[in-house]
Image 1 (cartoon, one colour):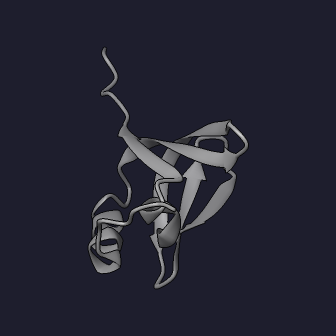
Image 2 (tube, one colour):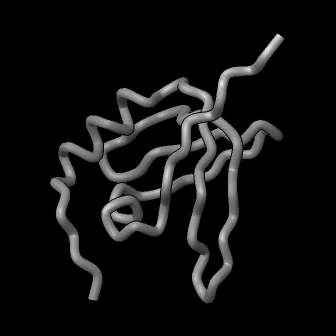
Length: 81
């Protein structure tokens, strides 16, 4: 069983703070299948949040996925000119 050490309201507040910031989202799809999505958090609703990938598709996740450690966020490094 997974250990949940965070508060759900704290998680929701952090997601709202990261809205619009370019990032990578690593998602555990189960059975050792991981997917990395490059995009931005577009919207934060009471139970779910949406991530718009750089290709234009929208992915929806619940805050419980973060608490269960099925989703990880990595900040996209700044582009060099």
